[in-house]
Length: 145
Picture: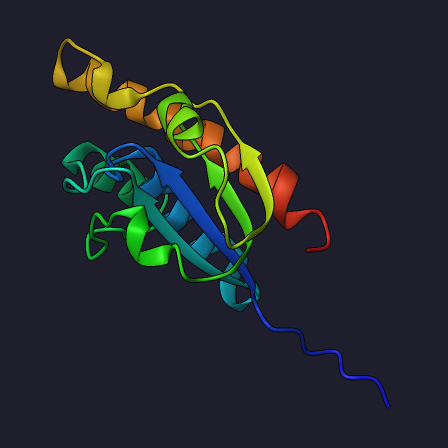
């Protein structure tokens, strides 16, 4: 008799500060992937989750307000099915993740570098969120893990 239940696919999103892109990616995959994924995010440096990231995620009914910024060191002893860097700096800083079965890099523009009005900054965060969502939907949710 075959068993159709599989353990969740373990995914770690990495970025430099674990404040926006990796946090949004974690929230999106958690919201869309349900119990098929165990999702985490971390950074090369821990800071805090950007309020703009929380705000634009709220617009798509994904609450990341309880998420915290973490450093990747705490995840080094763990194994993951997939480790995805979402910023170029993290990709260069962490070219190999010891516990990763697969490693990918998504170059997503850093919305926290956007100057200007609040609306212009939020637009940059929305753009990053939408890029992440599109990648997650096409590369993670439509393929078999």
